[in-house]
Amino acid sequence: VVATTAVVHDGAGASARGPVLGLDIGGTKLAAGVVDADGTVRGFVTAPSEPERGSDDALTRLFELGRRAMEDAGAPVEAVGIGCGGPLDPGSGVLIAPLHLTGWRDVPVVDLAQRAFDLPAVLDNDATAAAAAEHRFGAGRGTRNMVYLTVSTGVGGGVVIDGRVFRGATGNGGELGHVTVDWRGRVCRGCGRRGCLEAYVSGTSIAERAEEAGLRGATAADVADAARVGDPAAAKVWRETCDALACGIVSIANLFEPELVVVGGGVSRQGDHLLAPVRTAVFAQVIGPPGYVVRVEQAALGDTVGVAGAAAVAYERLAPEVTVATG
Ligand SMILES: [Zn+2]
Image (cartoon, rainbow, N blue to C red; front, side, top):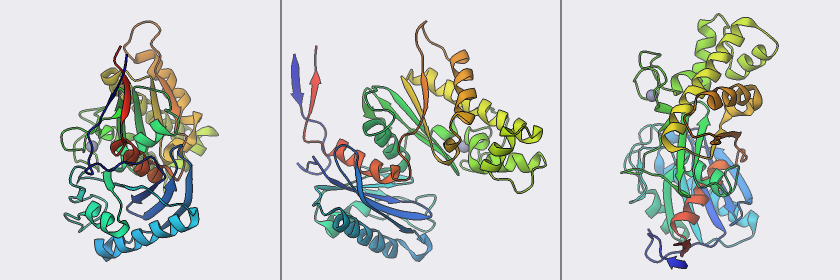
């Protein structure tokens, strides 16, 4: 029996079949693009965020970028999706006090966007949105249970459970970068606790650990390159990075039993130099019945993942209806 059920709506009967305008508010850049229902991004544009100029100034420029994207795409859109770092309130559409946007407080970004575009709008955490994008349009297409990790300056993530993005009590859940891999370990710059995954595998901490190992001024990419050609100090730092990432992924996989873990972000561009040793360690350590294999794959969406994610959560939350098999 197949039954049609209404999903929870945010915007009073609003719906989105596409295309949707995706807006991404990052600490260093703003981005906009028109995203079709199959994930194709058109009219993609970016500009520096300059968050210190204040939220009014930045949002005026962001909405202008959105208008340019729509002009370039030459298509009317049905809704606006917005992604930003937390803490934020996806329900009311308010940026509470984003960590990467110093001085922004209680910014009603959804109200402002709805007024600017005269369209329904939704807001979500950017890592949650990226998870939704990889699930809907990218490496996770067709999976029911998927974990997304972004390994970049910091480490973030999102979890898809039974085909839906998990948000938690206030919409700020899925902080996978702060899973503990060593409770007496390195201090985490992101949250202040010790031994978080982020304190080992973020680009920032790879560079820090390299510095401590005598590799002065080396970036995460430099460390990866030097490890590849056999530099012993770099190889040790890189091995520790892979081990820590595998340790974090095993803990997360043991919690959710996903079919797939998708790894994105700048550090993931190392591809199998990072993921091959991680896969070996994860396969050896993860708990599961014989035959359970958690795949670990590189993210499929590149620089447009933020915009695609903002649109993906708009498609999800403003979906007119979903059809579910009830058995
Ligand atoms: Zn932390």
